[in-house]
Image (cartoon, rainbow, N blue to C red; front, side, top):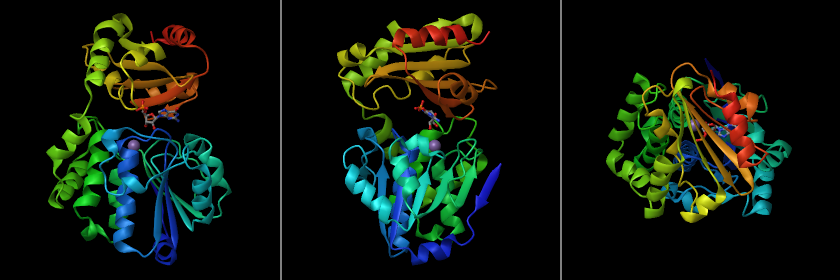
Length: 331
Ligand code: 5GP
Ligand code: MN
């Protein structure tokens, strides 16, 4: 279902002096693409100071987008971030819908008297914002940013740099246009972005064909040594310790997408990737078809996400987490 409550936002934007755009913890392609796409659009159309704030760092394969060098990381510049959030007239919250998804930065956003707008496609949105553009059926937040720009009558201002940010987010969130969330409309938006000058092949290369030898060898290690397959329950998962990450000089983003390989086995419809990193155990869940990993993540691992892609965390050791996971494997 689509929820829109944007009445009055155009006037608000025309009068705004300071706009802040915030996205979720461990931002992915959709988070950074939507944030920088919207920032570049505002820079081209309104006379306001626009700052993109992200809770923590993100992989280097996302560093090429226009405006990336001005992104403020909360973990690195907490005081500066607190100040811009405090002084903002409007805050856009993109690709998340609960302040818990931005950790400590959520307290700053909550305290700020700025008027807030959520643009997002995750289920069960919170109600901390006055304005909302929300659609769980949308492939990505970037597709919703396109809709938002259309709502503001600004599609003609989408030039190559803006279009490239939005293209990157749609491409990554749809698994390069293969997930069921990819609609006819998604392809129409993509056609518009390519007409605006996007070099689709070049963006694919920047995001996917840009890895280190270590990253590729880590993938090989996961596939040959670490995957555990439970054929009878249609489940497969990987678990990696921090020592194993160190062995491959792990860099942020190096394990992104590994979980999907488990789903490529015939008969496997539920996959997990469990990793011990910075003292916590982080989990990624993916499914095919009706098994709802958003519910699974919420119920068992304090997480959330979408029906077929979700994540969560565990506060116990890697061994205890994998034992708990195995005990929950759907029958
Ligand atoms: P990933 O496995 O790629 O980190 O995340 C997949 C999806 O689940 C994304 O849509 C992401 O926003 C969501 N997600 C990942 N981790 C968490 C979490 O800890 N809590 C919640 N609520 N959602 C998460
Ligand atoms: Mn997204």
